[in-house]
Structures are given as C-alpha cells and as structure tokens.
Amino acid sequence: QVQMVESGGGLVQAGGSLRLSCAASGRAFSTYAMAWFRQAPGKEREFVSAISAGGSGTYYTDAVKGRFTISRDNAKNTVDLQMNGLKPEDTAVYYCAARNRPFLAYSDSLGAYAYWGQGTQVTVSS
Image (cartoon, rainbow, N blue to C red; front, side):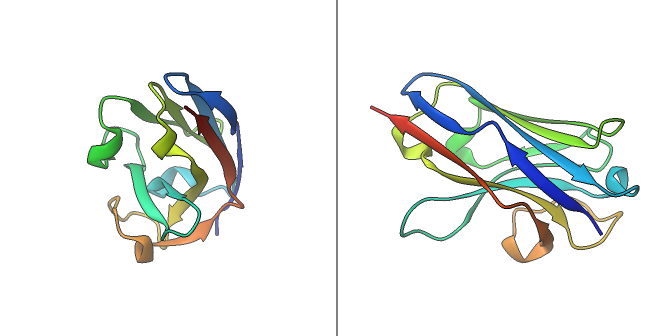
C-alpha cells in the first residue's frame, strides 16, 4: 500500500505559481504510477496529470498543458506538481493518487487509482 500527504497549496493571484508536493510512504513507491487530480466546488473530481513509475512518461489534461509540470523523486518518495500561469479556473482541492496496483501504466481514469491523499487547497484570485 501507499499512503500520501500533500502540501504546498495556498492563495495566489492569477498568473502566479505554486508547487505542490506529495510525500508518500511505502517501500514500493517506485513501482506505482502516480497522478494529480483536482476537485472544484460543486464539480466532479477531474484528472490533471500523471507520471509513470520510473518518471520517464508524463501526461497532462489539455487545460494545464504548457503550464503545469509533474515530476517525481523515487529516492525521496515524492511527486511534485509545478503550476505556473495559474488561472482562477484552476481553483480546487488538489489530490495526489497512486495506481491501484504496482507496475501498471499511468491513467487519466479516476477509478484506476486506489490510494489518495487528503488534498490541498489551491485558490487563484483574479
């Protein structure tokens, strides 16, 4: 199993930047594809970005391409999301997630992830 704790959220003006970090426990962290999802008030949780277990493959939803960058450090058991050019529509609770089993490819499907952090709030003011 993998347990995660997110940090780095906050309030920022439009055009600003934030860096989210997800600290994971578990010796098998490096075998799990990881992802970031977000959930805005009154909306369903949606995919933001994913990264392969080794870190060589990344995937982004169209809304954040060119602005967000996902990365991971398997030696430190962390997954980060660098968010630049933030927009008010990026306001949401951001969640870190781990695939339901090791050695699986990353996915943009909510149901493909079994392990979730508690979330961190990102608020972008206009």
